[in-house]
Image 1 (tube, helix red, strand yellow):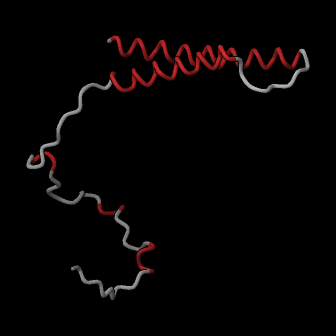
Image 2 (image 1 turned 90 degrees about the vertical axis):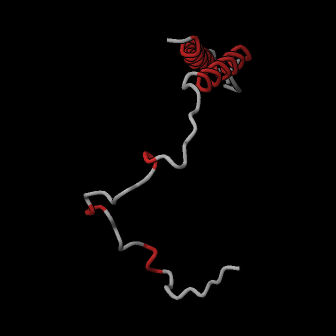
Image 3 (image 1 turned 120 degrees about the horizontal axis):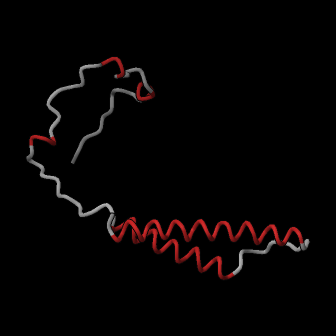
Amino acid sequence: MGAGFLVGVFGVLILSHAAYSTIQYRSILKITEEEFSGPPINVVMELLGGLVLCMWAALTVPGKFLSILPHSDENRVVSLPANVDFMIFNHRAKAFPFDMDVKLK
C-alpha cells in the first residue's frame, strides 16, 4: 500500500464523517424544530477536503499510463468470436434506406 492509497482511504473517512455530521446536524434541527437551510461551514470544508484527497488518490494510485503500440500483434483481432449466436443482424438500422447516394469529396 502506497501513500496515495492511504490518502484515498483517509479522504473516504473524511467524507464519511462529513455525511455523519450532516445527518446528526439534521436530527438536532428536528429536535429543536428549526428548518434545514444547509450544512454548517465545517461540514462543507470537510467535504471539500475529502474531495481533494480522494481526487488526488484517484489520479495517483492507478499508476503510469502505458503507450499502445499500433503495430503490435496483441492489438489485432485475427478472427471472429467462435460463438456467433450473439451476433444480431435484425436491429434498428434496417429502418435506414440502403440506397444512400453519398459521395465523398
